Length: 278
Image 1: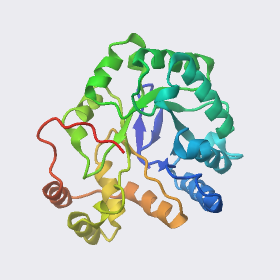
Image 2: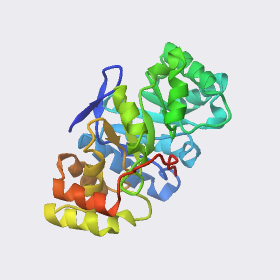
Image 3: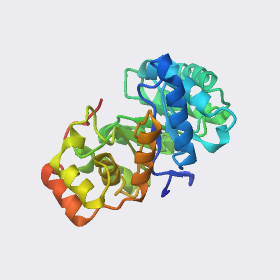
Image 4: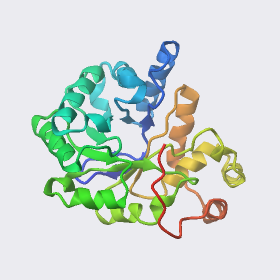
C-alpha cells in the first residue's frame, strides 16, 4: 500500500475507509464491523468518521471494529461546526473519544466552516493537541480563501489536511485548492471518490478503462484520484466484497489513454469554481 506523508512526517495509507451512513441500522452493525476489520487486514488502516455520522453511531461502529486492535488504526474524526468554539471543540472531542473507546484521535477535523471564528476553533484544536486527546488536526470542506485565512494564524500552519469532495464529476479543486495544498506539502483527503448514487460508475469512460484493465469502474475512479501523490481517498464499503474491490484499486495504475478518456468525459477545470460539497 502506497503511503502519504502528513506535514509532521507521519505516513498513512493512500487508501482508507469511510464510514458515512454506518451506525444507522442496527441490523447492519455486524456486517459494517466485519467490513472495517477486513479493511484493516488489507492495509486500509486509516478510518474516517465523524460525530455527525448517525449522530455518533458511526464512531461506535468504529470502536467495535477496533476492539483489541486500536493501535493498528489511524482514526480520523470530525467536529460539527456548531460545536467548534474554543471550548465546544474540546467537549465534542471528549464525547467522540468516549464513543470511540480510545484515549486519542489521530486526526481531528473541522467538518465544515460555520459561524465560529476559525482562530477560535484552532485554539481549541491546539488545546486538545497539548493534552494528547488528539495528535494532529485539520479541516474539511474549506476552499482556498479559507485556507489562506487559516494559514494567516501562527497556529493555523499546523493543519494536516483538507478533506474535500473529489472525483471525476467534482474536480474543481484542481484549479487552485489542490495546487495550493501541494505547494505546502499538505495532502488532500478525497471523500466520495467514487461519486454518489452510482451515476459516475456508469460512465462510458470509466467502463472502458475498467474493461481494458479487467477491473471494476469503482477501482478506476479510485485509481484516478490516487494518481496524485499527495491524495488520500476514503471510500466507504459496508460489505466485505466491496472492501476487497476498493483495496485492489491501490495497485491499479491508469494509462494515458484511460486518463485522456476521463478528461474528455469530465473536463478539468479551466477557471475557479465554487467548492463542491455533499
